[in-house]
Structures are given as structure tokens and as C-alpha cells.
Length: 115
Image (cartoon, rainbow, N blue to C red; front, side):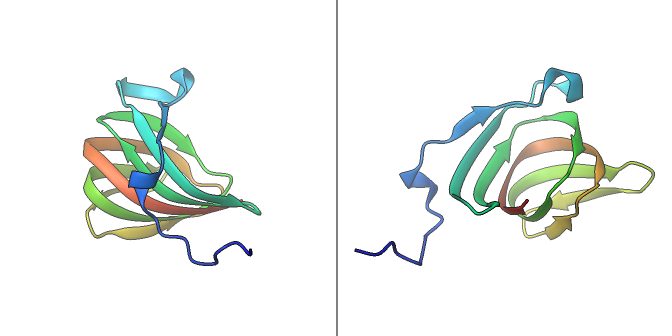
């Protein structure tokens, strides 16, 4: 039997991975992460990510598409502007992005990452 080519992003079928920012990246608060990685193959990752309030430094070596499902966060690029993102917003973070992610209200996003 061949593997299905349609994969539903149904987080009820997956146990989340629990995490937090690395201690050396933490700026403020005590943010906690839950990640439902529903696809992982050939350098591609897709799923749902959620974070509670806090702020940490981020550095991207990969390309990521994000669509905010709920909550409010502020993403600030080093040497650039800070952007507030909320439910309904979509954006791409390109390799080389450096800055910070601050969760003001628990934020949940859909993501697709390409290494």
C-alpha cells in the first residue's frame, strides 16, 4: 500500500513536543513552547507551534512561512523595525533573520520550514 499524499494538519492526532528558548537566548519572562510537527521530510517541516508570554532572541538559518492563528506577538529585526503580528497575519522569515520574538498573548501559528 502506498503512503497517502494528502496529510491533514490535525493536531489532535499528535502529541506536542514541549520546549522553551535556550537560556542564553532568553530576554524576559518564562515562555514555554508546544510544537506539533506533522510533517518532517527532505528538509521540510510543517505543523503548529504555540508559545506563552516572554521574549527571546531568534536567529534563522532556514526559510519559514508563518500564519498566525491566535494571540499577539512582536517580532523585531536587528537594525530594523518591530512588527506586531496577530491572528490572520502571514509572513516569511528568510535565512539570516536576526532579532527577537516577544509573545504578548499566547501565540499559535502554522508553519512551514525549508532547510
